[in-house]
Length: 108
Image (cartoon, rainbow, N blue to C red):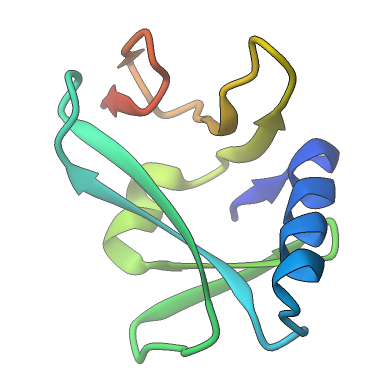
């Protein structure tokens, strides 16, 4: 399961409304190699399901990921922080043993 905080839900709704995207669009998250800690989060909006997708709905938001990424993201929470010191979308990942200062990469 991948969780969605209220802050992320509100921003996702705002982005979808601004872009004119309907309910067929969902949030696609994944983990790739890279970053200063070894693994990097990726997030985008998509409307094309893939055969290996793992789908979740939390807090009224549909989140999709591939099976490999799910191993790294299981029980993580997608959050959003705005304002002057905000970082945008971030993951609160209980599986990460360490994260970098920017919050965009992590290690297991």
